[in-house]
Image (cartoon, rainbow, N blue to C red; front, side, top):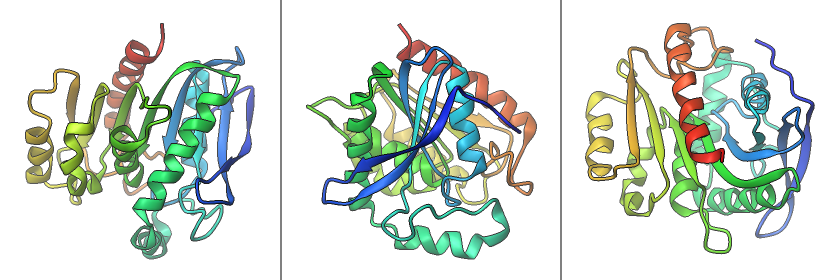
Length: 242
């Protein structure tokens, strides 16, 4: 799939402890709009993630995808699931504490961009689903967090449920009910942790893991992806667009 935006390039974000890292940026035709942080899968900022940013820009959002592996290997990128061992090793080496700081720095950068009109959300897939949850529960700039979150099948979310009380923005979780990496018990655990939160929705799809990744043939489920995407867009429009 190919999606185009008026501007698609990389910008530099300054890390809180020094250094700079790249973030892929896609702007809408209008040149401005609500902001969206886009968090990568284990494959890095690849064609799939750039395509998602471009697609979101086509919907009127200023999309920014930070390179979350920059401390390990800047601009690490794999096309698909053909090098899973290397990608999983990268995740195993990821310092989530440092990642939280990088996420906050990226949120501050996006909010400061003149193209960003105010509200900012986050969306992420697989590893990025967990990073989206981390963003929603920990990233604060001048005391303000993001305005909406959409984590897709984030398996590491379950290890972060102690921060559930810090999830204060509207959130839409997507899961596949045949996901070998996130069994039904794990989804039930998330549901229990989110009980009582009126602005949280957990959407189940008849699919496996990474069903939205059109660049990974063994994972991609076109029907489930086509079902989840309009739900995502409607949710984001409700909470990010005036």
